Length: 199
Image (cartoon, rainbow, N blue to C red; front, side, top):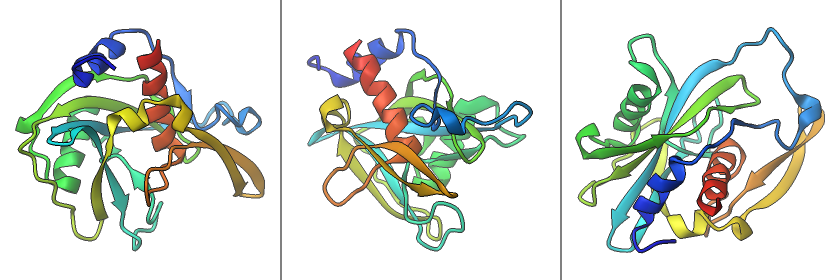
C-alpha cells in the first residue's frame, strides 16, 4: 500500500472493475432469466483512526430472521425514497451504526454484487472521519467492529470454503479476522476491492 491507504483505494476505484456475484464460485447455481434482483446498497466505511485505516463491519443481531449473527457491511434495500445506492447506503449506516453522513467522504462506487438471496448490492466505498464513535442499533446490530484495511486487502488472507445449502454444495470466500468469520457476499466484495488494489 502507498503512504496513504485511503488515497490508494480511491485510485483503485478509478480503475475498471467487474460485476461479482455469489455465483462466481458456483456457476451451476446461476439464477435463471426472469428473476430480476432487488436493488440494495452497502457502505464500505474506511475509518482512519489511531491504529491506522480500518474497515467498519457489523455483526447482525442473532434475533434477526434473515442472516442472524452474520458479519455484514451497514446497508440494506434501496427504498423508494432513496436517491440511488449512495443515499441508501448512507441512510442505512446512519440507522445501523449512527454514522452521520456529514462525517462521510465518498471515494467511489463498485460494480453491483448479485447475491444468492436475490439482491443486486451496490458497494459504496467512503472514508469516515476519525472522530466517529460507532453506536449499534439495538435489535438489528449486536456489535460494531473494525478490521485493518491491510488485512482485508491481502489476497493471501482469503480462503475458499464450502457448505451444503438448500441441498447443494456452495462455495464462498472467507477472510477470517480474530474471532470474526467474514464470509459470503461481504468477503466477496472485499476480495473484489483487494483485486483492484493489486491491479
